[in-house]
Image (cartoon, rainbow, N blue to C red):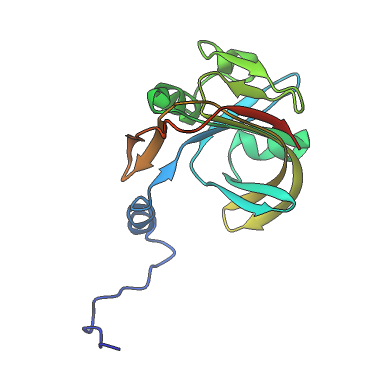
Length: 185
């Protein structure tokens, strides 16, 4: 194995969040809006979302412990994930704004419908909807990892995905061979 030149690898310091954010931003992700329903529905933009397991069907989302969503998600017992399409960067910005209004007022100007399984808002125009029951929650530093068991999934046809890379939104061309589907698991 070739030797590395001395001084080229710097271990991250816990206090150097800017360095870590820059490094983490080099990993391209999809963009989602995670929502909970009920009397006071709430949504937040999340790119820390991933699949975990096919059997049982599990996904995870990481939520800052100081975020409003942290408490709401822990109480709700279930949540929905809308994977945003390329033209929905405005929706991503809307739900990333921590100063927006709460409850139903926080969804003004955003087209959505309640999920049939969770009651959580599903964002119109998203390329995928997932409805999940809260399966587990784990603390991880300044965030918590919420794992949801997928109870229903809907894939829409011919939409391009919204991406987030290096602090900017971008798009991925759609795969025009995909067919839409809706399944309750």
